[in-house]
Image (cartoon, rainbow, N blue to C red; front, side, top):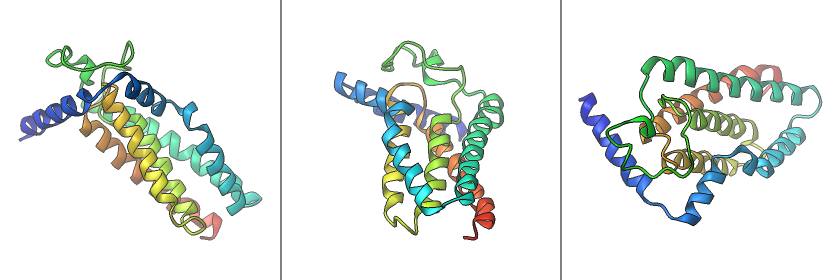
Length: 187
């Protein structure tokens, strides 16, 4: 059963990774880079500052730092180093079939995607914190986390299951951090 799921994941990866062109290569490289998202980060921080003035904003900043730290550390120490599933670019069976946009592809293991976990965690946390003031913010944040996750497959560094696992991990962490932080914020 696991072998069938892994084969399906590999086939889906090859299909999604195979849809490439030079323009999309550059877009997906940018999508995976945090610097490209600076305007969105700044707007989110401004919206949080307006929504949670004074000491509450410090709690929000602490929640953001905790969410990023947890998703990043858990994705590596509780998943990648435990499951030790090779990234597609390190898988000798398909290495010659994939489209790598840049040289190198990160560490040896890929399950779960740290990018997907980090951004899904932030998307969940920001959605919960800003959802009342900006009811449709979750749509933007869902598309944001989705594009970043897809970019990891497109770039040849993660299988779809790595990304989905990262989204689940990040969403759970983001939600739990929100649940913990809402008491000091009186939400």
